Length: 189
Image (cartoon, rainbow, N blue to C red; front, side, top):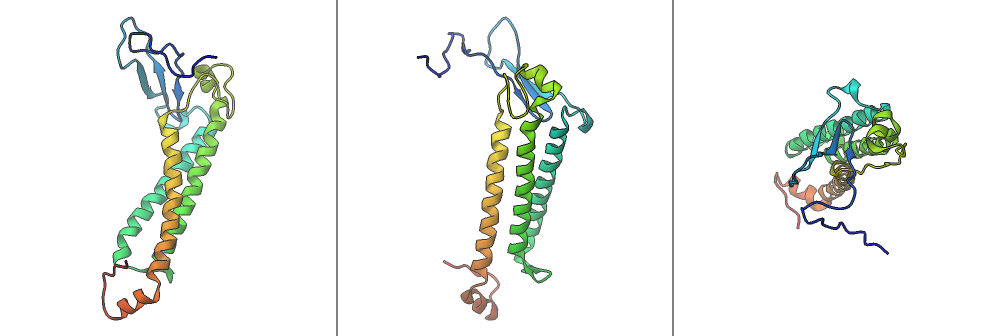
């Protein structure tokens, strides 16, 4: 049986067929040339603006990912004020931030689920071959950005859990006693 490892052809290249990557608005393809070099792929946008994005699913993906990132930016801004403000509309700032992180995570998940649905669009089929369809890559492969987005989404939910734990830690009796004594910086070990 054959090995699944890439075999070197002696020029630094691989005998395995190249599988291009295709993103929401960018693609990477192999450059065909005579001499071999380390940089034999070229990546660049195929869409210059939102309306040129190849699929309605990818447009929705871009919107959901942008909303998730916008909410996470708002959480980062609000978290700066946790040193001065402990509640927003009688809700703990930690609970508010955790809730916003959870909502942002849901938007990110929606974007990640919708992205593969767009693989059946005409542009994806032209790059990835006739076997490309919704949730089937055809001759293409997933790039590092998709895996990074998955990792970021997981970390978003982990941060939401940490926000809940921060609320539990700061609402303990020991912390309340320290606050009543007039201390403003309290470290619990």
